[in-house]
Every structure is written in structure tokens, then in C-alpha cells.
Image (tube, rainbow, N blue to C red; front, side, top):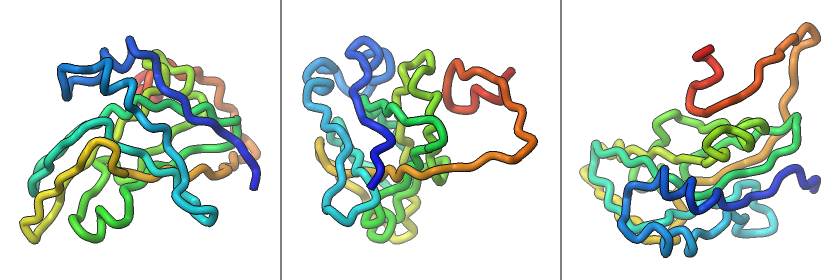
Length: 165
């Protein structure tokens, strides 16, 4: 397999700016686990929750993961909900699939990957997540451009920033 990326933590200062879920931000930051594959045959890198949380039906939570990813040009990281959470609880990403472009690494928020989950259960199931539990999975893939591509924009932020020029 070809290696095209690496995961890192964002700085403690960036994490403190983005993380409003707990008072003890430094301890939470120190305990962040970098994404990893569960088995040799896994395509997805599991992203882990930095904290405990409960998500009742209809509720949404934004989780600053504390993670960023250096990605070689020509590749992208797609973020999906963990299949077990979707199957058992109907947990969904609010943007359906998160797209982490290679230039997001240099964004003004250090490329901090956020995961926004919604419990869309129509069976009344409440999700209980403990710190360190897997909440999403990321898959790297190659992408292609058109012959007449002429993009020259430079990324500054994330979350729709490239269309705000």
C-alpha cells in the first residue's frame, strides 16, 4: 500500500480555541488518540472521541477531534460515520461525508478536523459514547481533475470558506 498522509494533533492553543465541551482542556488534549486502522485489511482510520457524551434522538454535537492530517497533493481524506453507529443508532454526519482536502492542513485553524454528528434514530435510541470510543472513520483516496482545470485559489479557512471569496 502507498502511504500518502500522516495524522498529527493540532496545537494545544488551537484545541483550546475550538473545544468547548469540557473544562479540563489540557488533560483532554493530552489523552487524544491519533486515528488508526483496526485491522490489516481495514481501509478506514478510526477517529476517537476526546470526551464522553450522550446523544439523544434528534440531538447534534460538534466534536473538535484535536486531529489534523498532512495529505500529499492529489489525495483527499473522506470522513464517514462508523458503520456500527449508523447501523445500530442511525448516527449520521451532518455533512453526510466530510471532505478533508490536502491544503486544509495549512488553514488558519491548523486544519483541525471537526466531526458533527446527529442522532437520527427513529427508534428512540440514545447513544452513549465514552472518551476513546470510535466515532467516525476516514479513508484516503486519490482524486483527479479535468484537462481544462485552471484553479489558482489559496485556502484560508475551512467549512465552506473556499466559496466565500
